[in-house]
Image (cartoon, rainbow over all chains, first blue to last red; front, side):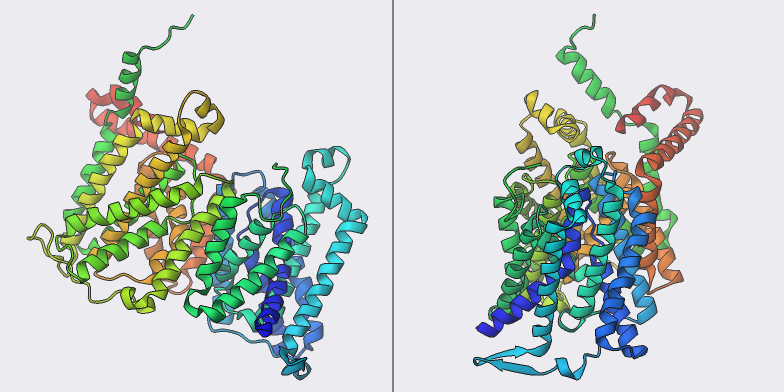
Length: 286
Length: 349
């Protein structure tokens, strides 16, 4: 029971790191980016290449994966995404689904369609027994990293100048522009960092989530659930939503194995019907 | 001073809009001529016809009512399994009746789920429609003793249509069957779209607030068109099951709904032929690319989507309109009498 809870929390933390970039970009530009999972996949494959083939240590591979996906995200944002912000939601959906298809096929072409595994250092394998609860060391590691990231993100958002600019831009883009905030640049940086975080999440999660070319399609719905259920106005909403989703999914798959995902979708629809703005969103509708 | 239009004016206007243009007639004559023109292409033609019907169903809610949906596959798959199961267990043997029943089953599902899409923004609708189709996929997987699970529904035997026309190996009868069903459904959709009901849908799409201010019951309009659209999607799904005697879990997949959006975007939304033309182009494109690179055709499909969006659908619609004006001109010159009617073709826009 507690092991399930523990696994669920680890899973949820991972989902949060994967999806938090998406929630900020969605809230900031009202842009539906279905291709977010592609960045996560890019991060995962980067780590596979770096660690398995080039023999770079795992601890160094993770930040490099973050940097590479952040650069990739920033590059695509400046070259392709900027043209689509002002378009209708339908165009955005089409555009990003097109990107997903392209990324799936290219990864299939370059890396093959089989599932990939990242070699995890021995120190992170095996289990720890704390008060009679079996905890995987790797999961503990994920919780530590993701928890740390969450705190850092929250601090950046709450305490730094960039954070307050970002919050201002999310709250009201036009007024923020009027105050002289360069919303485009803020958004570009946020997009890059968000993609980088997704890449880091993909690298960390390769072990738990599985990494193959269909990754962006498989987990797209999970990211979207985190964002829609959590709301886009704060970072705590998506965080709580991811933890709930993680625990719900792990518990669902454990207790009712074949109906696991069904439970998640049902809960999501129920939440969206009852609270279209998200479970933890502020009541002021925009 | 402008005079207030009378009821007579309105109905005359609607009748003028709904008149068949020579180009439309030519389209359907050609469609039926393919039965004799391309006897070795029945398989791809049949797939195109089914896809066209499916795209037509999405166009009704997307192009006319403005609802973005990623879950049209829910109705397609539901009716597909329905048609497969009734045929397998011999509940309804006659394919035509089974087809209509499957359509109504999908419509019932559409009616129930339509209340879910009434609320929320585009993103919420996207999630809810997608969620419904994924849930059905999970259910079909869960109850694999009924649906066959990941192996697909096997052992489906379809009786001859109307007791006479068997589904032969070459797919001739299957294609004719699909084409006729497509044509009948198209006629129904055309009637709906050109009716006052169809006009009110356009008003809803244009501006929900104003539409309700002039007395259009927005909620019920959306519920009805969503149900009708589910009916057509269901017919398309049932057709696929009947003509292939097989049904598998991928009928519920996200790719199916996403491809459908692409079809509609290629052909253009908001006029009924968009889905039809888009389906033919998409199938030919897919066939051609799949011949070039069997494994990676998805890449090029994705690229087409990205390029279309970057170019801009409005610009492409401009090109299509120009092409259509040109074609209408050609047809008009061939048939001088009909030159006066050509205005009707552009009314779709």
